[in-house]
Structure formats: structure tokens, C-alpha cells
Image: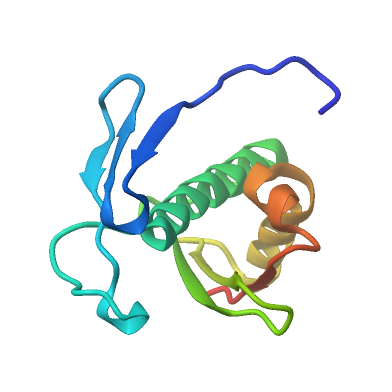
Length: 142
């Protein structure tokens, strides 16, 4: 990072994937549960992949909105980003995640939408910067 840190989020996990998470300010607090697909009981509770998907979706939509403002493009009220985060085994052992982003840019033609999405992914979104070269990320504009 070349500049100063503007904000630091802090959260604590206890009990791993079958535990509990809480942000330092108490705004985010949730029980964790292992999904059935990963051999757990499933049920009420969240998991790290859902949390990552929510964070990436929100951050990426914010990056698209920033790119649109910079380009003088007005986005419609139904602009959204859906993130799908998958988890599975790595060939080298352990696990890895994959990400599929599905941005919908309300009221924007396909060519301009592609331009804004590419700018958001390549230049703006810190989640995209953090995952680049480490996580397979595909983007399908819907």
C-alpha cells in the first residue's frame, strides 16, 4: 500500500467454522455453521464463503458506482452485483476458493457496462486487487 490506511475493520472468530464471529463494534455478530455440502449439519448460521461473497459483492458494486461517477454515467436504481464464492480442494493440498461476479448495470448499454466493470475490476476494487493472481475470478455481466 502506498498511502495511509483510511479504515481498519476488526472482527474476532472463536470456534472456527462451527463458532461465532463478532466485529469490534458489535454491528456484525453471527454464529457460524458448516454447510451440508462440506460435511456439516447446515442450518441457521453463516460461513466464511457467504461473508466473503457479501463483502466482495458490496465492494465491487461500490467500485462500479465509482467508475460510473468518474465517467459521468448514471446507473439505474436496480444496479446490483451478485457474488458466488465456491470452495474446494487444491491439487497441492488444502482448499481454495473461486469467485464468479454477476454485475447488473441498470440502464447502461452492454459496451459501456463492460467498460465500467473492467475499470472497477482492474483499477478500483480492493477485493479484485487482493484476489488477482490468487483466486480464479470470472465476471459475467447480466
